[in-house]
Length: 389
Image (cartoon, rainbow, N blue to C red):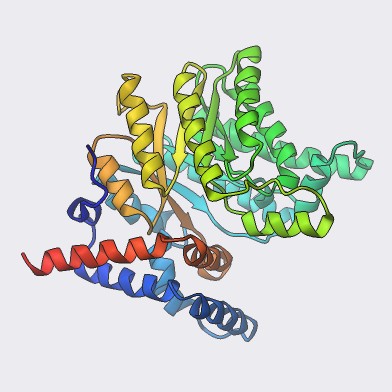
């Protein structure tokens, strides 16, 4: 049996100084009022062009990011690799809108693929479609019955060509790539484009992975559809399974526009569907490969149990566990210690341009019930254990 309370394993890569820095950071994040004030102060400082990069880089950036460039992430890649944990290099710059910026992002994502090629410590690459194409165009492409103008059609074709460039590079490098899920009102186009890429590149193995957000009440049915489509077209279907990241925005939009919310009624419903999806994927492993992106101990243990029952080798390349850098080390390091495949999402990019990602991390830690408290209690337990040695 695995113990997620084994802090000696969980924090084996961390010095006392690292733990104390993380402790004070999570203490701050635990306070919604401080996070709210910090966001306003940070945005004000940016607007006033104040020099805030250095203090941010030394604190929240250091906790949750690998560096400002791919090369700066090398140390994190090596440090994680020592403990059998892989790296997923995640270019986390958001809010770009020009074709020049989109093309530059494609280039950087392809650089992460080349960096991953033949490096056992970097099992996956990842990107968001909104990082390489305009949100409003993707929304139009997702709207049933909408007919784009000839200009819009040409722009949408460019987005698809960028996706293809990335997936082709991944195929040629032999590196699997995740296409992240986004808001429900733009997801239909992303799902279709992702499957189109699978038809080209997933004939022999899972190069292209779609992402399913199980806080949507329709995703379990969608998983069944994915299985049927993969069988019909004789392709492998890669799935990154997550609970989701746009809940408040989804509910607010549904109320504003007067349509039924796509979000599960309760957290328990989300957990139930997530765990059921794990079972379905394991049962149909002849088609599916899985990366279970989760900070949930029960789901992590359940997947390990499903794999044991199905007599799946823990080192099977078809099954990965993943968490974010700087969070849930008690899951990542203990699961890796038990000889399963684990990878950490390692965001990178210029400090100021990664700030929206970092502020969202702070928000999510504040809003997820028990997450920050659990991090704090484990850090305190390990510091106390070390003090008594």
